[in-house]
Image (spheres, helix red, strand yellow):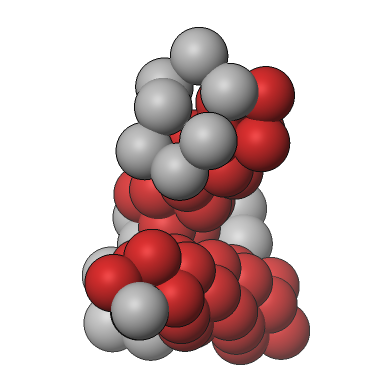
Length: 68
């Protein structure tokens, strides 16, 4: 049932993509230049950036697979 929005697998993929966009947005708040060191440790910034990069890469890969 490809491209059928009512299909369960398409619903799951849509939720995954929504969650990935949320992860990217949430973790992009913290950059190397504009974070408050009193609230966030340097290592946390690396963790946030890594999570954002991972989510972004997975979202790009899902979009690529969908075009195939």
